[in-house]
Amino acid sequence: TATGNSYCSNAGQDAQLLVEGTVYNGVKAPFQVTQNGTLRAPSGSNVFTGTSGTTTGTGNGFTPTYTYTVEAASTIQAAVQAGAGPH
Image (cartoon, rainbow, N blue to C red; front, side, top):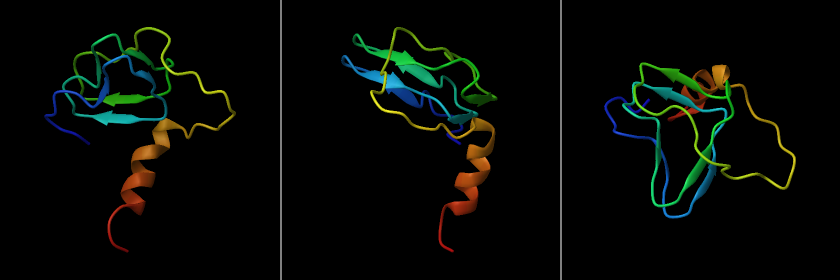
């Protein structure tokens, strides 16, 4: 989580972001786009809980030239918390 932060993902200075399979919990504005940046966030690919502000992308963002598999956003938080820290 990033409770209280003003933003999490920033597409600044001509950056092209693709944001998917991500959990935003308690952040004021998950996405910020500045200085000609673009951010693509496919609908339903991210989880927003207790957020306010921008939760949709703007522009085309990054388009990979390779194939990949996106983890379901609904499983990401538990997976990260289970694997983070000392074991």
